Length: 377
Image 1 (cartoon, one colour):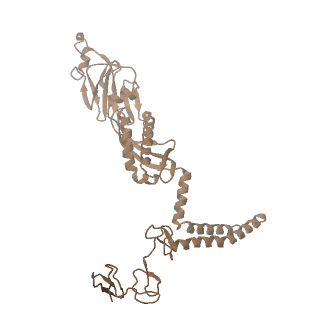
Image 2: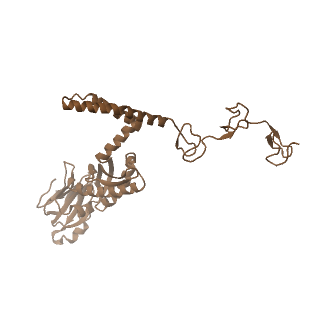
Image 3: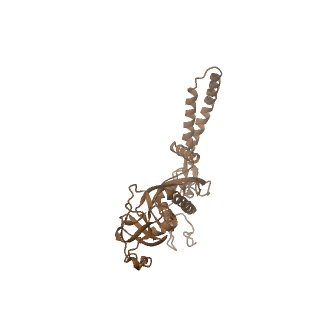
């Protein structure tokens, strides 16, 4: 930066840190400038030119010579007595237009989430975002004001509050559509896009653009996460039966390792004996549950679990297999059986054609079931 508080001939600013969003030249008060002074604006900057506290123009990248051509509004302040070169007091605010990346956001307090599986749960979320200034004069007037310099960290708390408020609101809409907390991980991109569009509406009011919005994780309370992990462990062991057997075996192993002395030894022996008496019943119960689970079949109509030998469904009442009556021994046999499994005789008698209507009927039928006429004398 090169300027003279008394008379600025060259006005420029360079930020070696990359974290300064806005810098005012001079940082305090104003300085004398004259027409013909040079204003140097770098590629990642815009310069807002002020005179007497009023923004006159916004300059883009390049070298600008301050003349009546590019600042015609100044001509009314410059007297003819000074040939148009009278000094005037000005300030120049340099605005950094680069993208500020990797800013962090997160929920300081859990967000209530109505889940279709967990019913109601409180979740936390965190991630990162990127932002840049797109309206230099708007950002200066609404956010920076008369500050000499404005760094990135000064606005991050404010932006974080906007992000959390809009993200929580959008998450409520996601929950109302029946999306479970377990489905969010596979839909982070979709949720981030929807939340970003909400947040951008607020950012635009301050001359900002959110270029990126990322969700790194959505987490459940520790107690809920522990219950989910335990449920997954039960399923991994083959259900409740396998989990019970594992728990019983673990308890017996721990009891066998108890080597306390005195009263402790007596209590250990008693506990061991009690466990030994309980073990057969526990294992037998688990085995029976496992056997019953394996010895079932689904109903073809309603899919209810039924014993293997069931003929009719206890849930819907429909037969599990179409049956018919054997014409010889009257036993119920499968509907597609050609021979009776009880008497061994053929279940489908030979057929003949009705002499009146031509329909096939049983050979010993006296009256045709189709036309009702007598088929034999």
